[in-house]
Length: 162
Ligand code: ADP
Image (cartoon, rainbow, N blue to C red):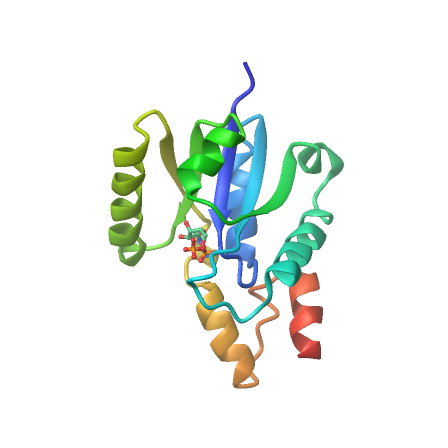
């Protein structure tokens, strides 16, 4: 039976930290669905269509054998419902530091109260990516700083135009 994992997130924008988690998760699942959240109650700098497009373009730079195992789509319903609708049983999340832990811990616990059959697994990115966050990327970029070591090329190109 093939194992399908869902990697949900805002990806506002996708970073090299996300990409590292995506590649690592392919060692754990047979198929990975990157689920870009279209949660209207959260404010995003980049539109859902652009976040989706940048994620697709970023994945296109991976080798074919990895690309084959990845699907990318947006979702706007409850995560556990979305996971079930995809016949998946695994949620993948990334951990950088202790600061991520509390939020992730609460989210996993809440998801479990809704559906106890779905497991969440946490992967750690490589150390060099620990300090990368979409939030800081946006702040640094807005203040004219260099983000080229933290984001994939399509994101760099996109941000340089806005
Ligand atoms: P969300 O709004 O759902 O937190 P994000 O796009 O910020 O969406 O993050 C999606 C997932 O990727 C989260 O589990 C987050 O902790 C993880 N993540 C983000 N950046 C990194 C990074 N640099 N290293 C490891 N995990 C990361």
